[in-house]
Image 1 (cartoon, rainbow, N blue to C red):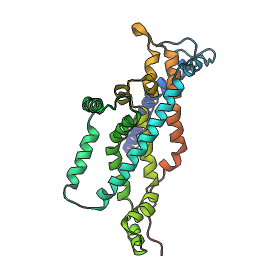
Image 2 (tube, one colour):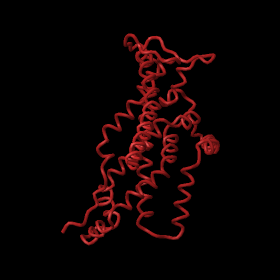
Image 3 (spheres, one colour):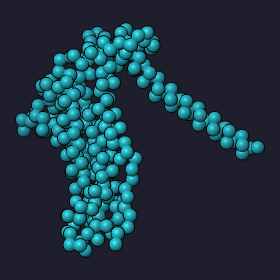
Image 4 (cartoon, helix red, strand yellow):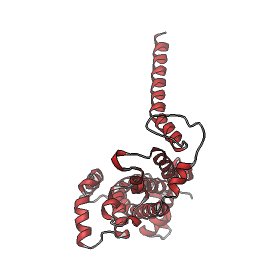
Length: 276
């Protein structure tokens, strides 16, 4: 009887937590969609009496909005690929070799991962100013990729650790060297990890506001994350309906990328024994 009461109390406690989580995340989303499809919106929530797409049309017809989406996509994809390539090359020796200073190097990478961008932006701006890189697309993209590289190294190292070394050793017996074994054996098995790291890097670069805002001086090169300023007027005025519609449009590429690769995100590395 006591055990049953304890189980019932635990179930009620979990139910309360689930309800709280649903309300905590669900109510803001409910307000977001109601504001996006309503003609008259404000801070207070009200269910729209009739669906209206005027907020979406106002956002999509803003000058330069399409260019800002294209800029954000290019910056996010290129910087994510740069970080992925660097991390894939750096993660392998950290996983397979034991050398002096390895732990210090990995802890240094972890320390860099924890540094806030506000601590780096001043020396970055000074460096860009000195080398005349201000308002240069490729330089900003490389910086965004470099900021994503440390955590990518840690994640890909963990995936490489999961790959049985016997698989690449078998390829050495067949005449492959370490480099070709890495590209032929390790990378294909790391595909789920590569997808996960790419998506995480894409999310970070897509939502990056601070770096492009400081290092770009031309509004035509701004990504879409910076255009959120367009929905705040003078004297604290906020265009809530357009801001809600913009938030939904802004989330579509990220949600689409997640859904398109959802199967791979849920997969695990299949690193079985060597076939005879």
